[in-house]
Image (cartoon, rainbow, N blue to C red; front, top):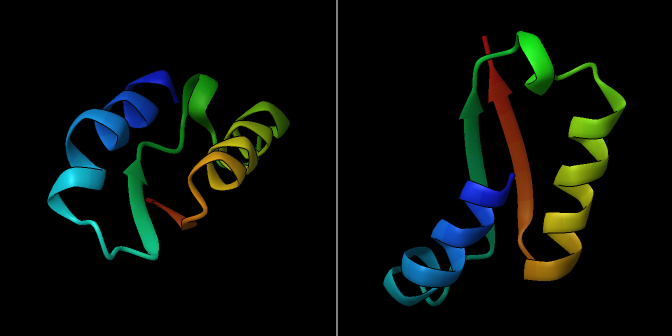
Length: 59
């Protein structure tokens, strides 16, 4: 999640200043499994910090 947060702060917010949502594509295995609570908590924190509606998309 740190990499996504860093990307948004350094590039995304400047390149897409009127963005209201962010689609994250991620592998659904390992520590980033969509069913894992930690991943969901981290997504919620990022949503709270950025104000973006974040939708994970995994295979």
